[in-house]
Amino acid sequence: MSKKDSQLSIAVLGGGCFWCTEAVFKMLKGVSVVLPGYSGGTVPKPTYEQVCNGTTGHAEVVYIEFNPQEVAYKTLLTVFFGSHDPTTVNRQGNDIGTQYRSVIFYTTPEQKKEVERFIKDINDSNKEGKPVVTDVEQLDKFYEAENYHRDYFAKNPGNPYCEIVINPKLDKVKKSFATLLRTGM
Image (cartoon, rainbow, N blue to C red; front, top):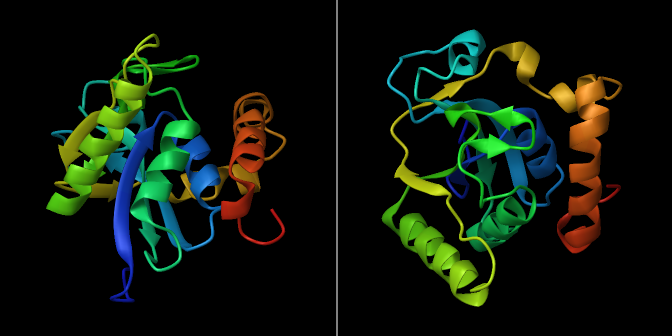
């Protein structure tokens, strides 16, 4: 984690597999750092294997540093909710378990209020659909994942998981949020 620039803000989001979430947020203008990791559990410095067994309480998340002058927190929330299914408990596709839960770890009271209002607006506007079940928790600790997880999609585009799960998600984000993407995306 760097946060060298005092104008940067932090967001920590869990939308299932962190390989997917990292790839999505790396595409956005105004985002300078995206790191895969773990938050929300009780085990200090967990390993990927520990988190995968579902007993640590940690979720796979991404730590995001962004410039709020270039991309608003609300915009990050829009992309977050638009790029995964926030209506399923402890599941994203075939990834099942608490480690894949939809969760937002807020870092300021203002973020908490904005997230709660955002979720309320989604639920109020969609009375016929399933409600958002995304957990909203204060960030306690973020543990960076092992190095081989960083830039996983970029380093492993031919991996079947990347082709079957991540590519369609990125295509959806490119189509739905084209104006928010870095040049050349």
